[in-house]
Length: 165
Image (cartoon, rainbow, N blue to C red):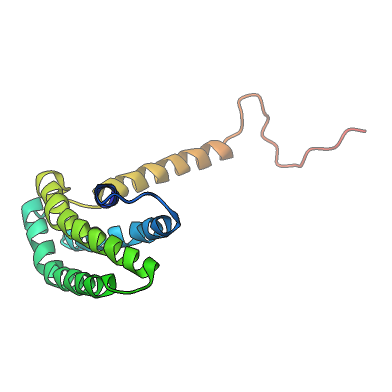
């Protein structure tokens, strides 16, 4: 996502734009749009059972999500092209930002993200979170047990303490 936002802002700078009110609103919207394709591929990548090789996971994610993502990219790209010709300044600028974002988001998801998952993606997604959960349960149990045991200097008493007058 950082790549997509940085590349889109760099493209805006290359076009000679300065940061104004319209561009600020467009960048705020850009952050949400930039995560869309990578999120879809991430979910598809983690859908297989544990132990599946990362190359197979990446291939399956591309086969399952690739066509619909390309269709979404095409329709968004086409609507951006149409919106460029509007007379309202905001919509014209927004169309360019959307065009830049979809281009970089498509490239980032299909090239950068898939390359990263193919080279260094986890074979068992969720294993780290499972180990964190087990560790947290262990710490909780230890804390719970230490709360129940009395301190070495305390006496065990079943009666409540009597207040001193």
